[in-house]
Image (cartoon, rainbow, N blue to C red; front, side, top):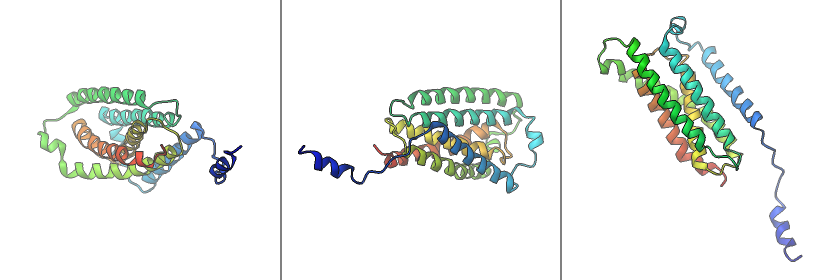
Length: 213
């Protein structure tokens, strides 16, 4: 046929593509997460008052809440790499989860907040440091997810970028809970949310350019 040479030209340089496995991708991310958590513990960065913190409602509120967001965001990102699946349902669940966590945070705050004034509770000097560290800890997770996403075939690249950024940001915040000495719900909502928003928005802007359309 007349088209045979043209087809041959197109396929000459093609190489076999390794078949994607959702479980392999999830295992890779789990291993990387374990390495990062192990590094934090290995360098002695765990907060010294951890035994006391584990008896506080606010500590478990932030730890379990972030774990839920990491799980939902990561699962939504991996599932969306299938061209027949969309991350939009995952984004909706993330929004609902965030609202529920904010409401629970308000309840925890009402039960344990002290008499300090707003400015002292926010503690901007330490808050900016915490936000920076969360961003730094989130970068490895975002990069790992980005590599996996680039190998996939997402149809809604913007939605995939959002859930990737949210999952990576929440993971950085989750790891930081092992070292962060602050448990005031107001402080956590402001500075953790700021750091996660920076990571998620940056990922949303950059990742679509790296995904194969």
